[in-house]
Image (cartoon, rainbow, N blue to C red; front, side):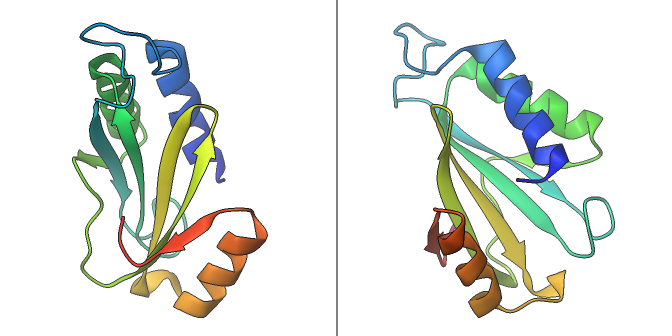
Amino acid sequence: MTIRMALLFSTVVACGGSGSSSGPDGGGGTGTDVSCTYAPGTMGSGTSCSQFHSVSANQRMAVQSACTTQHGTSGSSCSTSDLLGCCGMMQGTFYVSTCTYADSGSTATQEMSGCVTAGGTWSATP
C-alpha cells in the first residue's frame, strides 16, 4: 500500500470506526462505496484509484475530505476506462480495491502477479 493510501485509510478508521456498528453511520455492510482517483504524477507515474466498499456516511465523508486534501478526486467508483485491473483486499475491517490504469507503465499480468503475491484478489473491475 502506498503512503498516500495508508494515510487515506487511517483517516477513514479514525473518523468512522470499524464500520461494523449499527445505526445510520454504522456501516455494517450496508454503506456505500467511495473512491479516490489520483491523476498521473500525483501519486506515481500513472493514474491510480482506490475504492472503499460499504463504508458508513462518516467514513465516506472522511475519505472524500482526505482525498481532496491529497489532491485527488473523490467519486462513487473508480473508472473502468483504460483499467488494467484492481487488487482487492481487506485493510483492517474495510475491503479496498486499488486500481491500476494503462498509463502506469506496467502490464495487467505484472500487476496481477504483485496483487496475488501481496495476498490480494485480482479483478478486472473496481
